[in-house]
Amino acid sequence: MLTLVAVGLFFAVAAIAVTIVALRAVAVGRFYLKFRGKRLVTCPETHETAAVEVDAKGLAKEIAWNGAASPRSQLAQTKLGLRLSECTRWPERGDCPQDCLHQIEAAPEQCLVRHIADQWYAERPCVFCRRPIREIDWLEQRPALLTPDRKTVEWNQIPPEKLPEVFQTYLPVCWSCHVAEKFRREHTDLVVDREWERGADGSYQPHTGTRL
Image (tube, one colour):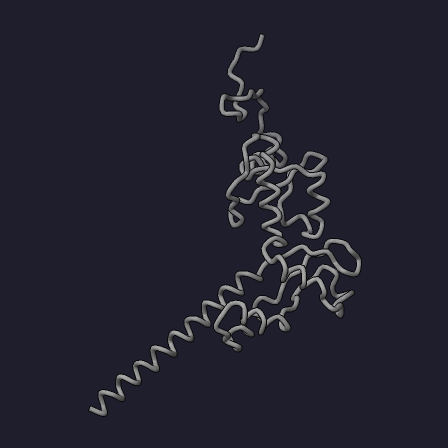
């Protein structure tokens, strides 16, 4: 009888331990996803845009170590540990007090570079095909930008902290049109220009009429 009780107690304790570990793992994953990624903030010293990254891995480790039960208490326990891992003003101002973290704490998603770009593209169609740019695939089919001198550029060619001014003068380009324009620019001898006309769906199509 005592053996059965001991075995039952063992499994009960094991189940509780597994539950605690699972809850901590969920909390770590939630906070890592919440604070990872490059963000744009207004530097409190210069009042200019800076691109920063939070030490998401360090934050996740602190949450795993503290193991608080609720999201609110987790944030309270880790707030002092919230810190930057990268900033475009470093290493010159690597000793700054990192007061910009208050902006990230107040709106962690809104200052993400990808979120800002998603919002910008969602409000504008592609400058070439005029089709809306929605549900962006940032891994394989990222949209591009058209510079004032009519060249398409990819995101990795633009410093994130320059995005606010870039959005003022550049135009949105969908992935398909970017690939076509890049091919046209790099292989001019293989490209034949044709007249295009607006189709019924609003997109441009090859002109099929007879030229007089």
